[in-house]
Length: 368
Image (cartoon, rainbow, N blue to C red; front, side):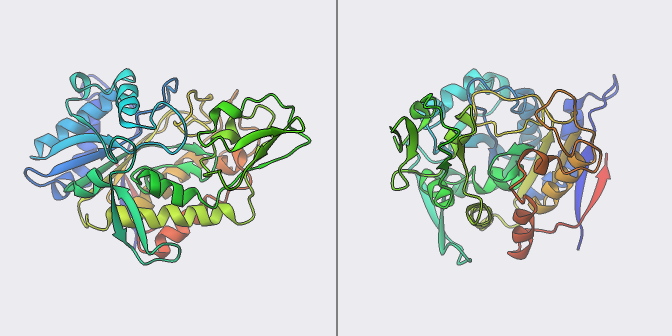
């Protein structure tokens, strides 16, 4: 059965600006059925790594907060700490980064709560009994919230092909233990012929799993947690994913974690994707490359699978922007994400998500 996905382009006028239209989009999607009076509402977003500028603008989050409050909810902005070494790996650094990127209370009108506590250990074990996991580990504050509104920046991602709602929920809401479990099959390898011993990767490994042996980088698989930070850091593409089995299992892991996040929120979740600044890689990096397509619009749905399917379809319908990293599949209809990450079958996450009951890949797109 097809799910409804609601779409707003980015046109505006003196009669209705884009911020106002965002509130109308949420109402059209059925926010009043998701948020009840006095509900504590977790607004899950990515605050952006310090130095990244592709994350969603705080002014949009203020409107989301206001719209939730108008329905009687008590919203708070949240994300869980990162697995990799960066500016958001513990709560003090995470909160500081969020404020520096513009998500202060004075701007967004809601408090900031880190979902898995000071060091990423505040978690709830949720029984899912699926293919790869019997139980999953989710940030406690998200599990204890009455409702969830996921606000995702839709972009490319080096491990999942693209990152949207499903990644924002499944990976983003996991505690550090949960993130480690999902990445456990993703251990990079070093192509020795490409390694020039520049040592750029060494300070970026949070687990000191990389060392120099005979003037070549070497990764200790016993120490590696599979966070993947070294893959994009390497300027010579000498560090690469082992594609044979690791990525499909990683995508399954992420979908099973999504089931865990949503288990106690039937009918109490709404999803928003911003298809703007469609950068090639995750907002976890302290920079972002040029966008691969024009800004397209904002989508909202109560089906996490349908909204991601619709988002990737809209991106792939576009001409690629000149000057981006995308060199193939640039024509309308070309698979932009396979053009960037040719070895990642991004569709598998949607297939598996549908298989385990997260939603439907069939959708009806309704413009407002």
